[in-house]
Image 1 (cartoon, rainbow, N blue to C red):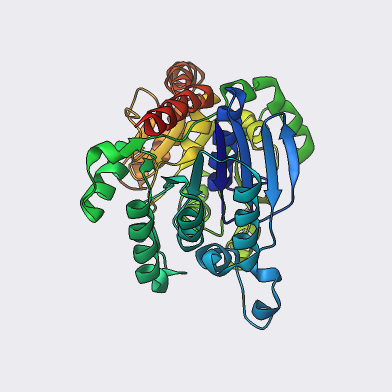
Image 2 (image 1 turned 60 degrees about the vertical axis):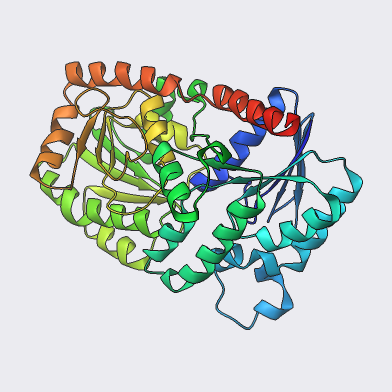
Length: 389
């Protein structure tokens, strides 16, 4: 079976949850014998036998866009107008016998429909969120909501199969676009459980100059995405100040694209450090005593929650952060409707060794069900069923 996965954004390096999902799906199905070609707005390389990455220039590198204030978000949202994407996709389809064309997000659906008309390829739409809702409530690109809705509707209607990250997203998608349930398959986010070695956290403490007696509270995510930026702001302005009388407790926030506002606020907070993008995120998670996710907005399932659980870390999160995951309050971590005194007390409680160990064991057991190898098998079954029919 030959699969082409089209991502209208940069996948390598994996700087955000969307990139990690795409890369891990490709790696998982490739390791099971599927031949994979990944197209993305980046550079070309060969990951392993049967897994090839082909890059194309992003729109921001085109002459027509050099006169505008451009961003990665706009680059993704307008990717159907990227001639390099269309040209590269057409060339790949002509040179290879592709059975499945998997579209990551709805943004390239217009280009995909052109190729589909020429090659009669089977299209699968992998939705990372219900994008029409995600964009609508985003302050930075909320004005693009009608465009997102139009493309998402075209994507679900033009595809033979739709992947959603949770049952909740499946319900929303079916309701919004009147889809039959059989057309939508839940393909959750996952983790590589073998990546989390507890001793690797010591290297991070040494690198950052943090003693082993200090307690680390950790959060990460692309800080250019509004829900993550809001969560980071909550940590800096509302959570961390409650621990300033406990100098041994340090809050670490990792993620690309931090705003000037949060950088300036963190500089005046002695117990907060903004790390920016870090490539070895698993090691930073392993260095922490507690991981937090005070999300108040966003959709889809938060890959960071699964990463924290896979590392066996106590998680203190909002209900929004664990949405779509069956995380049980008091069993796998602590879950609250909002960030308040209870949330802060739970962080302190989760640092107690006995409770931390109990929560960590249950967390790892929970994350074992979301190993990418298991999810890869489910994807291949969905492909085979689709092609057989």
